[in-house]
Length: 90
Image 1 (tube, rainbow, N blue to C red):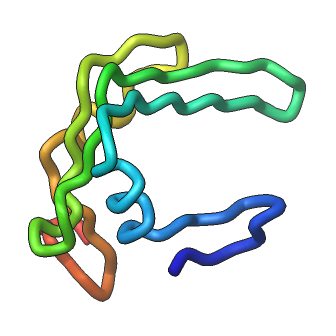
Image 2 (cartoon, one colour):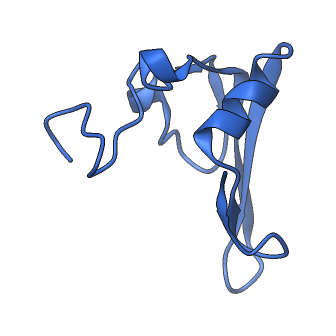
């Protein structure tokens, strides 16, 4: 389903992202801008989510950018939340 404000901060939802990402080969580009206008980015050469039966496990390619690589440590890990705990840290 997703949630939030479609004109602002919005989360598409894992099922929607999965359905979009399974249609082809994609890169992931994350662009960030701070309050004073400084922009940084993180780009991953490939992006894929496994299905819900695989807990929407994240698959990423190699990183490049200047934002710092904060996602590679999540590569291959299942998506976890308080109500669907898939790791020992939630």
